[in-house]
Length: 172
Image (cartoon, rainbow, N blue to C red; front, side):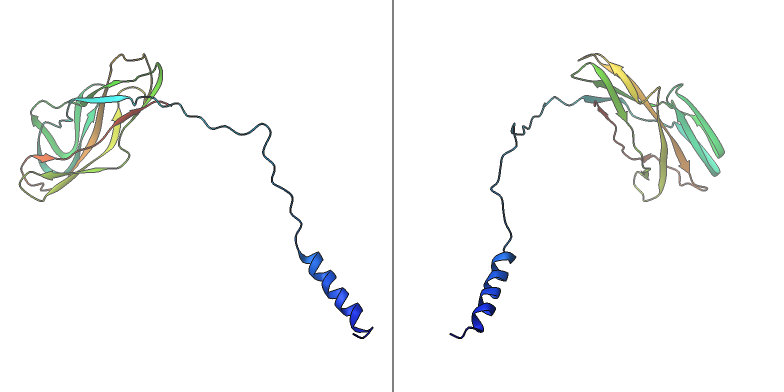
């Protein structure tokens, strides 16, 4: 081996040795981290009455608005109340814990479809009587009502229209 090659070889070995990363041995956190969870029963909701807009007549497009605070139905445009017994949806909730619960009503519209047909109407602008946030006692029932706005089309086909919506009760 020549003397000139030795410095090149040692420089090459030195660059390989310094390119390898230094690593420290893993060390556990002091004290170790913990995980926990508190599993509780869900709040219960029971339907007592469906939302009912009563009997309506239509000459031009308009709305029927059910107010859950008063159970009063008001109409706009060419929509006229002609009878029936309109009322808000009525629910009963029960929370397994004392404290604040949140009544969650739909955010999106639903579609009502004519029974035996394909014609539709939309229900939206959901409201709840009082506040969505309520203080309740543990395992004691509490009631709440839900209202909404029915959007009726001009020349709406005669018939019964039906659809479904979901509410729930959550506690923080």
